[in-house]
Length: 349
Image (tube, rainbow, N blue to C red; front, side, top):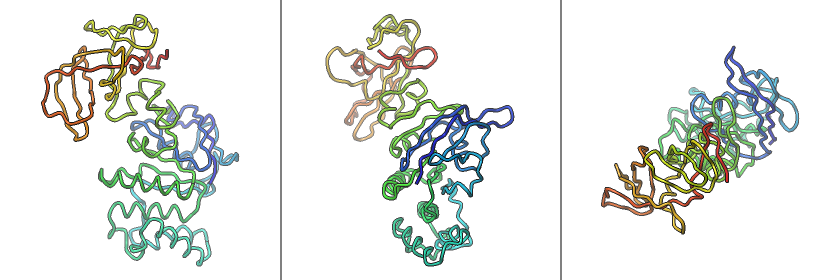
């Protein structure tokens, strides 16, 4: 296990800058998730950490020692890929043993490590099978086992669940997180799925266009996004946005609707409201009537899609509503309305 310190890291492809002056500290034993849309640089950053991509500037430190220009084999990392990267002609046991044999680990120790990993991952019964005889989830366990037996400084996961169906992804998220907690190895996990990020990471690194937008715990990033991009990307269903003109604590929408927020902003702004905050309780609410365009009953909750000042918003209410109302009455607390300036930065009180 090791801490990982990224300092002023840059990666260029010719004239194109893929990573811009990144700084990130990952603590020993921490599970950090890199998340963002396609092309934001998260996989490029992971490959730079692994040594698979050369860096153009800055440095990477493992436990305080510079490794930024070392080849991958000298960084002592284990990587789990999207496509499993298993040898199809070898059995599960042989796949698990392969890297250890290359490292010339004694046979008795290899057997001990393989037995341990197979037991932890519940794949002992598959050790004599070849990968083609396994399901997607079982192959992913084997890929994880191959990383585990190396006992590396850190685990790097590059979108390992994207090939699995939705139900299996949920199960595997739990397994990977539980496994990381059990063995305590520093782990960096790349995904474009913000639900994976929210449910797995000790901390999330939200990336956009080769830059880090925000770093924090899942709950902090959800409740306190620093930018409109982070607010819209993190959260499922996503935040609803409304264009408005701010006049102190008064927010005036394009149709003249007025909302109160806890900011003294003035001028053109964008308002953000989480779907679950349209049905807040308490005093001094912003009371509105919304025209419903469609709805989805999800069993424990109902999502209403409605029009507000020419914008579509989504409002979530607990319970099943089968009445299909034409309008709904909502109440929004002023302190739950997020206000963003013209540049997309959040405006605080």
